[in-house]
Length: 444
Image (cartoon, rainbow, N blue to C red; front, top):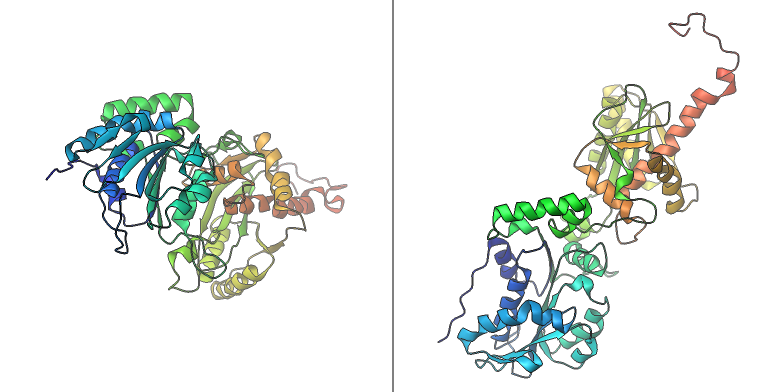
């Protein structure tokens, strides 16, 4: 009996071992996506029954789909022929088909330059190579219906190219959003994200050299091609270069704390998918100088309980001797304020809590007004931290409705709380007009 012998590195093995029906794999260059794809296609072609035990006949095919047929042949044909040769595979080069005599199943290479060629096919498994470069409607309109008879599966592989339909599919597979009935259409999906270095068979020196070349040309390119990060080059309001990063805290200025609360986790037994789909709450801790420069010390984010949120706000306020803390009016503020009052009473500490409001302004207007001009004037500096990338990613993606903006919103609220307070104490004529210090050194 012929045997197919292959070797997978640990990251490939993790994908292969997954029992999920649909897999979305975002990985860096030279990770081994194509090798894994070809091996998966061969093994699916050797199956004799569906997952629920129904027999599979030779009338169903496995398809390896590239951006176009030429790309599919270039990437997979020779490998497919080599791997199936020990199994007695019969190649038909003219039609880009390899037939396996054990089951009579055909593995067909196709291209999405002619997606209609797949209409009406009976497919037992589909591999979509470089899905980010394919039209975003071919999966739902053509490939997914062709899997219904066989209850077949699919794998989407590729290197990210911004936050397009490949990203949205990967995100859905990872988050598993719920529909209006509380069910997730993505329950049988799984998302994977690996870097180029996760391929343990790559020469480390060669990998470092490639990474260095990418990083010299563009940090964006390095993150996308090597680290397989879903990042955008620039959005409608911000680019990744708009934010300065420095650990040097301004000598003078005052701290403000603002929060964007997204609701609270109260049930310990909630499913991961129910928790993940909610926005994070975010707390921005920011030092503002008299010149109007912002030094953002930290932005915390997470899905916290009411109690934890209150403790974080209290700690941020008192650890930084903040002038005020701002929270948007609403149910979440009312919930957390009860805890804050309890804590302040227990510890005999007072908090200056200010009501924030969206003022009937669209989020676009609020964020543009508060942040865009300051960024372009180089007035916003971020203290280095793990949260930097998250904030910058949100800024660059804004206002994509499929991405979060909680950190961005929390930071934008700083404009609303700090400006009125500075105005009260600096520009109020009753305070400044006619004022002359008796002592120039002390100011009194």
